[in-house]
Length: 157
Image (cartoon, rainbow, N blue to C red; front, side, top):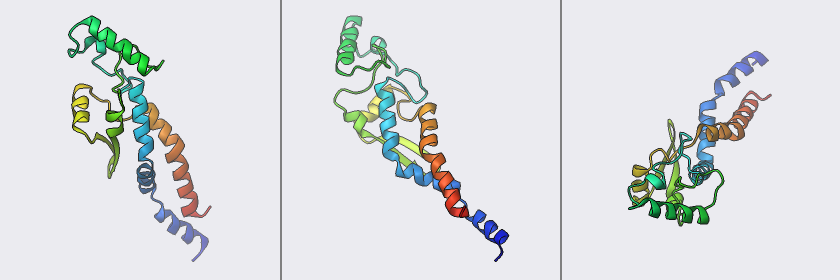
């Protein structure tokens, strides 16, 4: 086999999509940690604030009760990236720990494995998933280097 045929043969072996899926499956804990970090900052996957805010949540019977709770939450889980009245959906970590990233054939899915988590995600929309910033970070730190190495290894260059 001549060098050109060898290169063509190796090109046929390239499968960046499968390599990407492999990298995603190998790094599910990274996705879970990134999602928890977003929630601690009070952010949804759309990079908007988690709503309803404490001050607009019908759970609280008065604005004073809501403000008192918001101050308490700011005290126990301070985060300069989260506004005082924005939920971060953590008290003891039960819900945050229940969030799972699940690799699927067409990408990635986030879910919670507890009934409390399902109640939370019904009330607070779009909290499961990653912001575009975190997706770009994952691509830069994991996908691009892995695909580059896959190409080098497959083409033997």
